Image (cartoon, rainbow, N blue to C red; front, side, top):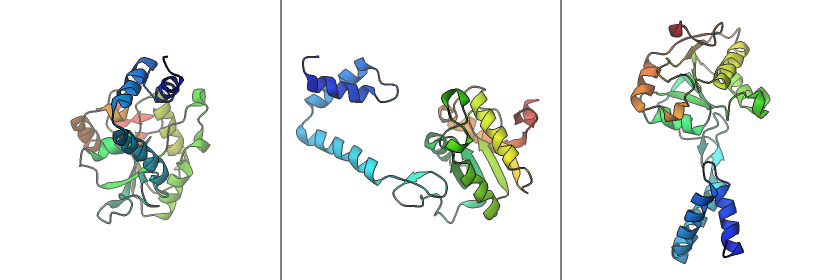
Length: 208
C-alpha cells in the first residue's frame, strides 16, 4: 500500500462479511475521494447506529427502544409467533406483508461444528413467551438446512407438553436455501401453506 493509513482502512473494511481486500481497497479509495463532510456523515451514521440500536427485550428484533415496533404494535396477532434465525429473515417475511403475527429472533441456529449450542440462542426466551402468553401457534421459519432442522427439532422437543400448535413453512423454499434469499411470492405461499411440524422426520408432513 502507498500509505499505512490506507492499509489500515482496507483491513477494517475487509473485515466485513463478503468483502475481500480488492473490494475493500476500492471502497477505501472511493471514501478517500469523497468530501470531508460526506465522510463525517458516513462515520457518524455508523457510530450512531452502533450506539443507538437496541435488541428488543421480548423478541430480539432491532430498534431504538427496549421494545421494538412490532412488539408494541397492538394490531399484531399475539397468538402466532414466527421463529426466525436472524433479522434478515424477519425482514424477508415482513416484506411480503402477509404475516401479521409476532416474531422471535433466535440469533442463529444450532451448529456444533461452529460451536453454537442451544444456550447460545434465544430459545429460553421463546419458551417463556409460549408459557406466559396466549400463544396458539409457533411457526418455524428457519433455514432449510441441517442446522435449521436441528434447531427446529430441539425447540419442538422443548415445547413438548405445551398446548401449542407447531408448524413449519411449506417447502416452497428449496432445501439448503437461506430464507432471506427467497422471493416474496415463494415466502407468501410458504406461509399460507404451512403444515404441522413432524418431529419424526424433522420436516413438515407435506414433504413425505
